[in-house]
Amino acid sequence: MSNDRILTSRSVPGEPGITARPIAVRFGTGEIAYSYIDDVLLTTTVDKILAYAKRNEKAFRPSKVLDGIVTETRKSISHEPFKAYGKIVIDLLHQNFETICWSLDVAQFEISKIECQMTFHRDGEYFKIHKDNRGLVTRSRCLSYVYYFHDEPKRYSGGELYLYRDDPESNKLDKTSRLEMIPKRNRIVFFRSNVYHEVAKVECPTTGLSGARGTIAGWIRTYDFNVIEAMSGLPAQRFRRSA
Image (cartoon, rainbow, N blue to C red; front, side, top):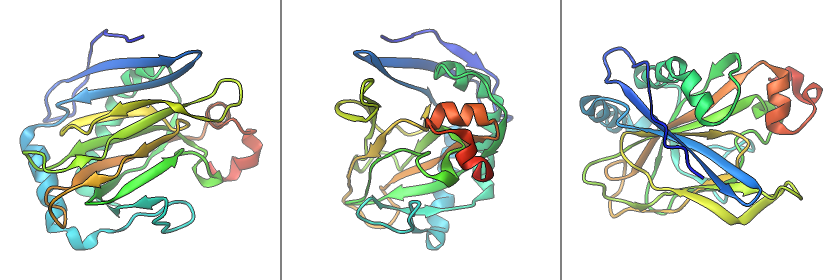
């Protein structure tokens, strides 16, 4: 079932208006809710972000998971913090937070922090199935976002974002039902942080950042323990100190 209602929400200063098309895809009694916004930033801004990344390629390091660098699970390079263009994305999230929550069928909550990192997946790189709020230090992540940018014309294949649902009876990952999002330049995607997802392996004929799959991604956190408990499925007191 899809929702084709179109919202035009507040724009980021200096950027065009934003049009959101929320979508909810249902698998039986389970549901994967996600939304996306196309043409988020000016074309010149996207080009500047890409140029910034290429100028600062030496600042990128192997991407980490909670257990550190584990290439069997995640293989890519990331750069954080980066203030120049991270702030543009964070401002966009703050100014459109009401729309984002509505599109994911999530009640608005108080934001404690918005995390932001720039990541590139080059040839053969990936991120296997995981949840963004599975650890005690990440339980306060409520909403996840991914902004895509890359060279034009697009030079890589793969790198799809797959979203999975939990089986409603066992509350475990159901690999038989998944939703596919193909990376599109200047699109930002939103989903709940408790949704299983993965990044498919990228195939790219180039080396370095030229032609690779670029993203600015992160998480919207809260101090609201009721929201944390609802999102993570664990009693809030177990991770009260790490929220």
